[in-house]
Image 1 (cartoon, helix red, strand yellow):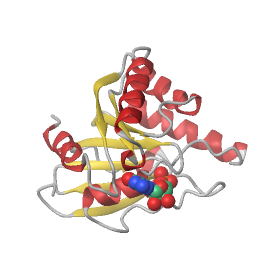
Image 2 (cartoon, helix red, strand yellow):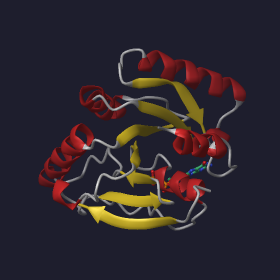
Image 3 (cartoon, protein in one colour):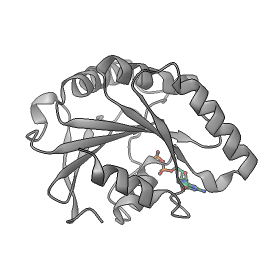
Image 4 (cartoon, protein in one colour):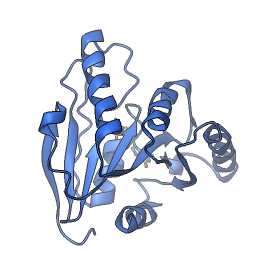
Amino acid sequence: LFAGPVTFVKGVVAMSGLPPADRLEVCFAGRSNVGKSSLINALTGRKTLARASNTPGRTQEINYFALGETRYMTDLPGYGYAEAPVAVVKKWQELLKSYLAGRQTLRRAFVLIDARHGIKAVDEDILNLLDRSAVTFQTVLTKVDKINRAERDAVIAQVKGALTKHPAAYPEIVVTSSEKGEGLETLRAIIATLE
Ligand code: GDP
C-alpha cells in the first residue's frame, strides 16, 4: 500500500525518544472514539496495528509507524477525556506542543472529526495549537456510513465554515468510512504524494 511494509516503530513519551527526522511524517489526531484506530488499521490494511487503548490515566505516547521506507505516520492519543488526571494531561500537552512546533519533518496533521457531529468545542484546542505551530492540517470525516447524503452535505458545510477561522487548515476535506472503505484510497494517495 505504501511501497513497503507498514510496521510499528515505537511509542514516544518524550522529545528525546523521537526517531531520527530522516523522512517525511504525518500525524493523526482526534477525540477519543472518533474512529482513529479503525481508520489507521483500515488505511494500512493491518487489523490490529493501532489499538483503541488510550484509556484515561495511561501514559500518553506518540505511536510511530513506518509506512515503507519513506514515511512515518504518528498516532496521537485521543483527546476529550473528562476524567484524565491533571498531571497526565499536563505532561502530554507539553510533549504535544514540543512535537508539533519542533518536528521539522512533520508535513501534515490529519484531524479526525466524527461525521455525525462535525467540529465541536473539544476539537478547537488542537486546531488552535496546529495554527500556532504552523502545521498544515486536513480534516478527515469519519464514520460517514452512519449518515445520509443530506447530513453529509450539512456537516461538510459546518466544517468548511469552522475551518475559515484556522489559517493552518488545508481546504480539502476527506470523507471516510473505515467500515465501507470509503475515502481510504484518497487518503493513502494524499500521504503518498506529500512532498
Ligand atoms: P478511537 O478511539 O478513535 O481509536 O476509535 P475506534 O477506532 O476504536 O472506534 C470507535 C468506535 O467507532 C468503535 O465502536 C468502532 O467500531 C466505530 N467505528 C469506527 N470507524 C467506523 C466507521 O467507519 N463506521 C462505523 N459505522 N463505525 C465505526
